[in-house]
Length: 109
Image (cartoon, rainbow, N blue to C red; front, side):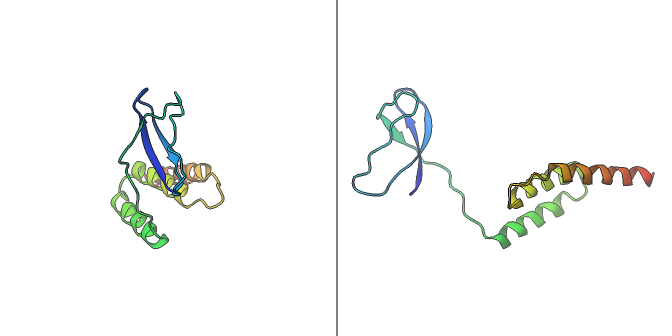
């Protein structure tokens, strides 16, 4: 069942609705004012990528930001969120890795 985006013509609220694809499917109503005076919007879509494509994109981003520790840290956090399979929070691990990195940089000065 696809998710469509709508805008209420009465209160201007934008909302998304899961819409059935059967002949008897009713149009959704505005969740704010309950109006059925709504307009379907053209919404963005995202192509689903397989694991190999995700890893390739991450590798390219890592190569571009490898000289900037702050950019690398941000990238690692984003990658962790994308790759965390069981909902584990990797922020603590990344904070520790970042501290270790900067501690090592201080030792070499």
